[in-house]
Length: 155
Image (cartoon, rainbow, N blue to C red):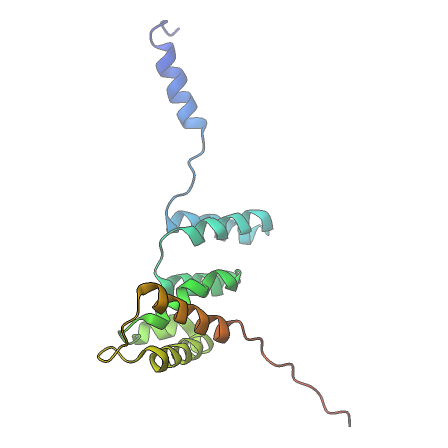
């Protein structure tokens, strides 16, 4: 039987062991997302998606995860804007992770961004906010486009 002095320690240890730890890393949240997806738990998937969105993650990895799990593409606009403003070229590994559809749109947004603000060496003097605003506008225009419906001929 525990002594009176050890009871608070036992209570604290028991409380800690029964309190679930909230996932705090990308890999932990991905585990939750995978399980929620495999068990078709939509509310858990949505919560995991929102928590994952808040964690710092490389934009390429974020886009790949969103594509793999078919998550809300609206949450990817900041990741696309980051890639749009990136001055270094994308690597082959990055383009493979993005897939052809996303890579084509990222390339188009980067081209439009360079046309508006100039290349690295001759970039116009813009504040961070102005540059971000331009990138956000371009990304919204390119990535929010819906594919045109293919109409069948009436013959």
